Length: 300
Image (tube, rainbow, N blue to C red; front, side, top):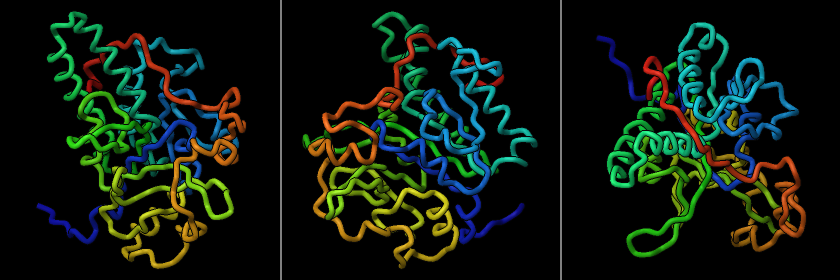
């Protein structure tokens, strides 16, 4: 039996969950990875990566570029799981970037609504959903040959005391449990610097109303959204004491949501001062209407 050291744990394969609001730039994070990466897209929203040369499997399209019916997209994801376990994929890619869990979970829920159409079967539906959703996430997370990044939208919720907080937007109770599955959980959002400029950041530590964590203990609480730099710091085994990741973040005014300043947010996410987003900008995840259960050979 081979015995490993905890010193090497996590150094070879990082598992991350990154969530944030629509249009904040989560998908663009794939472009900050310097090693070979495969993007697995469930949203058909890749415009932000059009200036990059990154391999993509879009589960909304077949190999001929034709739209896959919504009821077949989870089966397509199962085919992707089969592919990433091949020697061809393992030899070519170091990272898997799955965008996004919010869309995939919605597909799964609507699939199960077809299986359990009667309202009285709600308990069965959500019980089955929880098992399948956990299995899906862990199946990709536990692939040993890859660094794996999941993205998701964010949602506002209330705790048992009625206090509002920001969490991962995933259907069912698993949305609250999901952060426990990962070593690194970051929230991507926009903040305003002292000059009134909007900048993207990743919050890596839990705040009063934000779910986040960095089990490596090597990242600052707020870092620039560059996955290569973040991975280098975590793998380096030394806590970041420089300004390499947090350049420009040290001199911030008190944080406030950029929704209160549309003219500031527009500089970062391409909106107009009135808050409208131009055509082609990803505002969020459409809800699938028909999903078919994944085939047995790749069932989650």
